[in-house]
Image 1: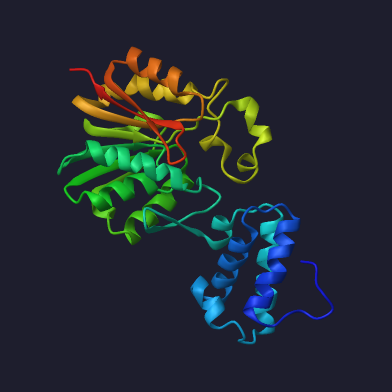
Image 2: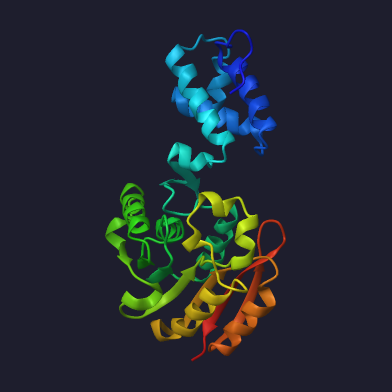
Length: 285
């Protein structure tokens, strides 16, 4: 981090310096990022930066903060630096082995919850950090479920998150290529699968920092969704619900895939920005 002649020794002064450094390096929301990372170093809440605005900081604290600023400026996501991310008001461990849970995916949780009764069994395909399945089970104590992921490392992260969020006894986590190890029938299948077209990955910052296997959806971005929709009916009870997230512009093709895959009552749902990014559908009886 570029330094003036004398390094500031108070929280507010450090945030101001870091804000300018991150902004210069193209980081979005540089003030917020600077505050989050300083609060992490000091082990305080963000608001306490300003409550203790004139508190002198130690050299170790300043050096630790400088190191995090350099990592963030080089493109490492804040969630990976912190090793955690909030989702659905729950805290999740995140590592470079899993996608970072995004706020828009909470819309998928909302859509699934609207279809869930008081008891049942769910399956999360490509469970990653476990964010979706754990959020659903935290809201529905009468439900149990299974989370599948092709990455052993992702399963290990999800196991930890299930334990710390109190749903481990109701969520089985299994290393599996899609449905290969799915056992029994389910009332709900939910998935946030890879859906970015292969040719677009090089243009995206996310593909340089997060696992490509969780992003690459093949030539048109829909290869994995097609596979999942083809296999899902065999694992859903009659009248069971399927929920899926997809990319901007994919809604018409996803609707067609679902209709040809034995689903009806297809509902295309907009995310918080008003973009069609989700679908729910019911297995035809």
